View 1 (cartoon, each protein chain N blue to C red):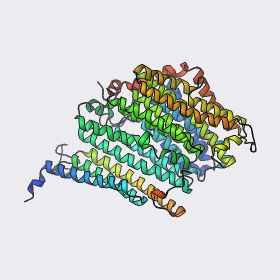
View 2 (view 1 turned 90 degrees about the horizontal axis):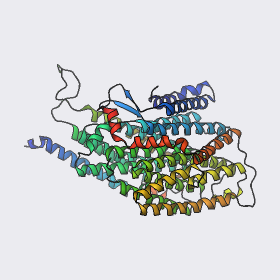
View 3 (view 1 turned 180 degrees about the vertical axis):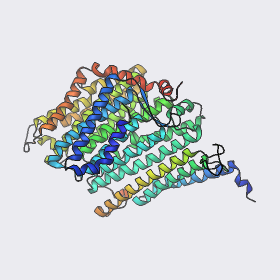
View 4 (view 1 turned 90 degrees about the vertical axis):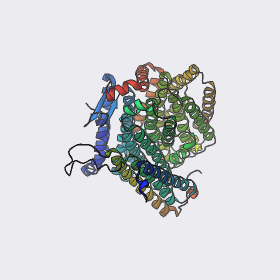
Length: 125
Length: 482
């Protein structure tokens, strides 16, 4: 019944629309939320949507992982490994930045009791 | 000799720092400084000899990773290693009176910052640029929040939030580039970029502009800069305005010249730069906090460099490189001097300059300010003159008027500061400057004056650097062969 969903074009359209929706949800959060942690969540949602978009658009259905195994002797019908490697790196970096940011937020909260971006007024005076 | 050393050695030292710190209390500081001096020696020995060369890491270019060291990137490498060596020398004397808590961590971050800034300048692969972009960012965030006071943490948070948003846009651009072109190599992207559909081209350009716009501190995206400068210590600010911004500026325009050699957006970028300069100088007028004021002056200078690079002809770029040099050196002097003032008088109000009782510091700061303003005899003049001349030649008279007007505004607050420094009145107790610090200050000030009096000493080199920076064809040939 849902066979038509398996066509590459349909998959790519769904991936594009879905990940762009996520991206704009994140952007909306970034522009409207004031809580520090919600800020980080918004940024992470934006990042993840881009990872989905990138992998979704470069992944080819029925193609295998680029590893010579199970009698496979030639590099044919294989998925491009570069996007995966890139996204892995990007996930790690994103995680590190997130951890650092949250630790700053915790330290800042401990010292001042503030979590709202608008209340951050140690500077500017 | 290999250009990988410029990235690998600081990274290695960064990671070896915990071991080195066991050698003794001063082990880390002295060994890092020695390593930086070695890199300085390497880069200067290359300055005299070099032609361009490619350093291939394991696999040949279109697939593998490579570093390109040509005159343009060498200029930045030499500048960065020089500044970081000066920074370490200054810190060695500064730590006797006011050492950072936990110097081991501080030097890890310092070396990471050096490695990633040089990596940004050298890489010829857009994903590597992303990785170095993030490493430079992360070390800068931590350096900014290093003191862990509420204001330092606030500065760090603001820096990190904007940096994280910038990296999201950058990775979006990289993903679109890879999906459409199928390569991460700058040469391959450059060859195919012109053939992309117009809307994708514009989308990628806008995403890159937003991603780098946060980092190169251009007008609508630079709201965080002054807060970060105010919250961080002055010592670290010297690194931010001397090294980090310059690395991002170089990479942004390097990508621009490679991807859009015909300069489709140059008029837009010139006006963007001129407007950011005007906005920064207007906002700078009413500041009463020294750090904040010099942050605005940094914004103005960076916007001027941005305008000059955006013109995309070799005379303007030569001027931009002169300003890069003059601004980095002058801001080093200013922020080092502010460090001494902060230590002694515990105040950042501009009125503290009235009570500054140290003829040496006053003279040195005056030299730096005059150079920033672009007064003849100082290095800043040469750069500003070349940029204004290029604007006239290009017929960009509106931008010229904006920039001259912004410079006038800049001169108002610099002369106000100079007036404060040389006003008669109550002086506080004498501020002593140690011998090493005097040496560092004098060296930097002499550099400004020597380059100002005799710009021909480096102008031929900078001219070659600017031509090479624009010559995307030879860059492509070098990377992927003919």
